[in-house]
Length: 484
Ligand SMILES: Cc1cc2nc3c(=O)[nH]c(=O)nc-3n(C[C@H](O)[C@H](O)[C@H](O)COP(=O)(O)OP(=O)(O)OC[C@H]3O[C@@H](n4cnc5c(N)ncnc54)[C@H](O)[C@@H]3O)c2cc1C
Image 1: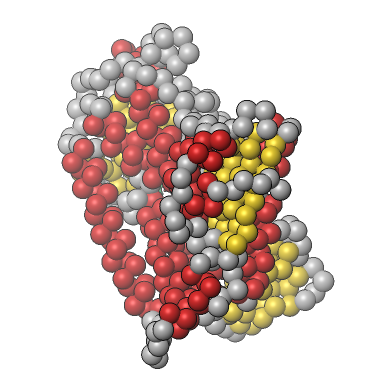
Image 2 (image 1 turned 30 degrees about the vertical axis):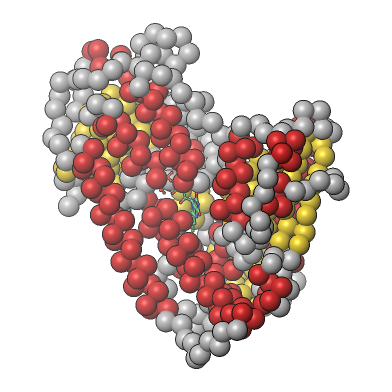
């Protein structure tokens, strides 16, 4: 119901700690608002996604009167159309390998078939459960839930379906949305969100894009038996990842049968009945059943009325923030994808935690964007933390690189011709490990642990002094001795 209150009612008397000015220690917008005026809330957050839920929940637990506005499902992109449904699809897509690999271990797997509708229904049920978990978490913390689309009236007031709510602080956590290609027929392409609700699994899919979402969907669909062609305008996909990782993954995906085409440009998409044709610059036309466009996600700021609040945006529409996530309007803050810093769920959550400490914990806290570990749930998987070799050379000059390429033990019996690659980038002067990179099974699980060592600025000598767990792939990270 639009504009409906959930949780505890708003009250107009103001309570809670006054935040010191971020740099000088004087009372700032939060406390200034509190001193002179009565607000409905101490914090109103627009968007109940990864960042918004965490911020409003922690703010309420810290004693603030917090409200969160959501126009769609609780949990945002991650829960409803991102990380969670995607990872469930990744699991689904792995079974084709597992069935094939089982033979090497003596198993005979009988007739098998895949039911897309059942996967969707089971996925939807789990997401509905998570939506409920988020609602309970917010309610239990005492956050007021407001349903509907919020727009700014001014820097302290938001409007939802004609009802106005005032706040000492407003947090924008509206996330980002996928963009479609600006070519004729671009509207015939699907975006990632629609992939989670396709009525039937297409036999052929052309994917346009070279980021992690494009790569992950290429592997998911291939694993489910779809003929996949991935088109990317650059010479290689996964910009921002280490070049060895990018090359290794491209080789492995091609070996598996994914048609990767780099350095190509789409000029138009045609629709012929149920068929789509993706036409390239050289007039090559690729016939397909569906086109997935994953060329990036634009911060969701259009129509919010940011100008009425005095909130400045950058070229891609991202909200410009300072190191404390404060916008150009002193009472308005922004976190998560809408700021286009690092578009990942744990980053949005980290920014939320820092902001709550700043506003309600009395400790001005900057979010830390260094050494954020990240993964691509491709097949084989990719994960990395810290600097790529190229970044390390640019920043530190003299770096030592350790690299190991090997066939995972499991595949000695499966016969699968697949390599894993691990790489450490080390600063020669300090011996500090600047970056760890991996392509191979369980890469994300392995690199998450390593990320602590990299964050703690562990040296290569500390890696060398660590006794491995045998037999694992992960032990390779502590047994690489000879630099390349
Ligand atoms: C296909 C896909 C896969 C992904 N996989 C991963 C992954 O594996 N790991 C990872 O870390 N990240 C992943 N991400 C990214 C991750 O989902 C985002 O970084 C994260 O959700 C950002 O959180 P947020 O709080 O900034 O925004 P969101 O989670 O997008 O939440 C924003 C919320 O604001 C609401 N909203 C917007 N405007 C208004 C308004 N005016 N009024 C009321 N409500 C509004 C929206 O409905 C939404 O619920 C993936 C994303 C996609 C699309």
